[in-house]
Amino acid sequence: MALYLLFESASGYGLFHAYGIDEIGQSLDAVRSSVLDLDRFGKAVKLSAFTPFSSAIDALNQCNAISEGIMTDELRSFLELNLPKPKEGKKAKYSLGVVEPKVGSHISEVTGIPCQSNEFVQELLRGVRLHFDRFIKELKSSDLEKAQLGLGHSYSRAKVKFNVNRVDNMVIQAIFLLDTLDKDINSFSMRVREWFSWHFPELVKIVNDNYLYAKLAKFIVNKSDLAEKDIPDLAEITGDEDKAKEIVEAAKASMGQDLSPVDLINVQQFAQRVMNLSEYRKKLHDYLVTKMNDIAPNLTSLIGEVVGARLISHAGSLSNLAKCAASTLQILGAEKALFRALKTKGNTPKYGLIFHSSFIGRASTKNKGRMARYLANKCSIASRIDCYSEESTSAFGKLLKEQVEERLDFYDKGIAPRKNLDVMKAAIENMANDISNDDDEKVDASAKKSKKKKSKAEADGDGMDLDKPSNVADGEAEPGTEKKKKKKKHKLEDTQEQENGAAHVNGEAEETPKKKKKKSREVSEEAEPKTATEGKKKKKKSKVEDDE
Image (cartoon, rainbow, N blue to C red; front, side, top):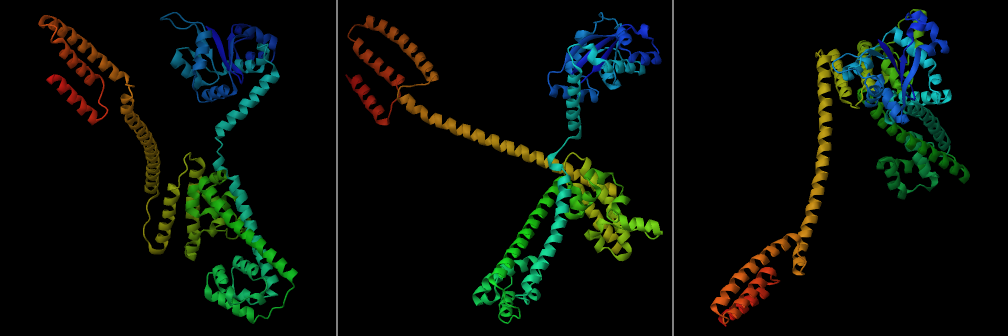
């Protein structure tokens, strides 16, 4: 039985005929020893056909199909065109060797070509792969390497399914910057307080907020200039009129020393910088919230944006966090305490970064360790759902948060919580309902668009209908009305001929009034009356003619 080999390269499909296997031997060791020698291997295998890929996109599609075990239409036509066709009702006297068994089974199911995939075939294909550029003279080795490199990059990129909206590196950078800004704003605010307290020391006791203090320092500049007229502006800044009055009274009896205008300008500029940093910190926090809702919606709804971002940052990425066990996630951020406890054989830490969650703080002292372990378990589930689910939804995170609340009630009041299986089923149902609602909204939106289009088309049609009478009045009738008028004209002509014959029999005296009547009928049928008054006039004329 003849043996053909299908080789899938980065540049196209190749079909090889293994016609001289007896020369190299049918054992695996003989094939392996002959693979390295091109002269010996070339006597056993020869190129039968080759078809190149049309483009890089086509090569990627073919590669994806082969990796999934699917035979494409291009591969089917290539095999049917180049393989010998068996006679009707008889089996093929050859077999096709392939690397992937799934592809071979699909080819045999669809086309009926017998396929095999064993170690002997794979060794032969290994030799084909090694000497592939030698079999095709027009193909250079450098071109083949470029094709392999480009296809490898595009195939890996497609498999990773890179999504711009789910890049966790942005969250890592944002949380690092947020922590740095918090430290810097605190140190700068303390510097503003210390600097301006030389001039107005009483303000520190009245205002505690750093941002508000910097805002007041920029507004006041010189305490001696404060008066009763500034109370509304101070009340707008502080949000409290009593506090504004207290600031004005304190400025009048202040013990601080006077500063030169240059010093006051520098204090004012520095206070403005602190205000700008505080405003930027708020914008960065909003950015972090939106990014966390896009990347890890379930983890965000369970434990919060900041704590979730710190967990992702400490693990290195969302995928690394998803790979962590719940026990590892529980002590993330407490590595020093863990290794110190292992070294000294003391008690290991109960929690790390998740201590900043509100659930740990609400639990009693004896239940903090239990709560940390339970919360780490739920965080591990949420991070895995966020990492590996294709659809972004927060349905699981909300119900996981409800489970944690129920666990707190169980520790405090003894109320039994729901089972995890029931909660997960409810979460799947909620997600399915959300998806169906989104689809319904899309359908409704498309229906509204189609209704608008129809209404516009009907309005245009009504406009055309309104224009029709004027066209008829001007003598520009439509094709349908012209056909009707032609039929009427033919009927009138037939009646005219019949009446003319009767007129010749009765005499010439009766011809003139009948012709006038016919003319009046023709005029009334062919031309529509423009107005009601014109119709009345024509009726009167016809009556007068009948009387005559």
